[in-house]
Length: 289
Picture: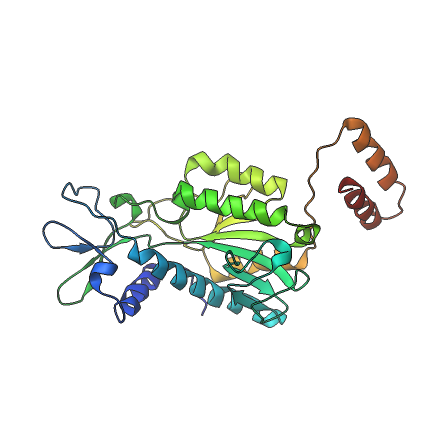
C-alpha cells in the first residue's frame, strides 16, 4: 500500500460496507428517494440524523491508517499497532490509541516500547450518491455538501487536543513520545494559530492531512500553517520522510510554571555541564522537580 487518501479509498469503504449493512445505514435518504452520503447544500427537504456510519468509518479509517503507517515503518523493524493500550501514558482499555508505532506487536504496550502515537480523525470527505443499480457516483467535494468532515469539525479537533493533553500530563514517561493527529481534510482558519501554538508548546507534533487533493476541479486547500502545526502531504514519500524525521530525532516535552528566579537558578546549574546533551538532561530533570 503506497497511496494516500482519495476518492478511491472512500469508494472502497462504501463497497465493502454494503456487504454487511443496509444502504440506509450508510446513506441519508432524501425526499425524492436519492441515497446520498451528505445532504447537498441545495437540499431543503426533511432531514434525518445518521449515526450508524460513524463507527463503521471509524474502524475503517483506523485500519487504513495502520496499514499506511506499517508501510512506512516496516523497513525500520517497527510495527504499527491499532488499538494499543498503555496505562502508563493514559491509553486505557476504554481509551486506547488509534495507532502507535512501536517496537512490539502487542496490543498491551509499555511506555518504553511506544515510539509514536497517532490519533486518527477522518471521515467521508466527498459526497456520494448510490443509485438503484448499486452504482456509486461522486457528486461533489466537501464544499458542495452540508457536512463538516474530519478535521473541519470543531468537536474532532477538541477531542484530539484533549486526548493529547491527557497523554502529555499522564506521567514523565510520555515526555519522549511524539503525538500526531492524522486527518483527511484541511482545518478551518480559526484553528491555524492554535495548531501552531500546540506544536510550539510540544503538546502535539502536528495535525497531518493525508489527503493530497480534498477539493475537485483543482480547488486550492491549505498546504501548511506558518509554523507547520498543520501539514498536508501530497505523496507517500513526503509523508514517509516526515515520519522518519520524527523517528530519528529524540525529543523531550517539558512544561512548568516557575518564577524567574527559579528558572534562572535551573539554567545556571544546567549550564555548568560540559555538553549540550548533559545541559539538556539536567535542565529537564530540574524543571520537573
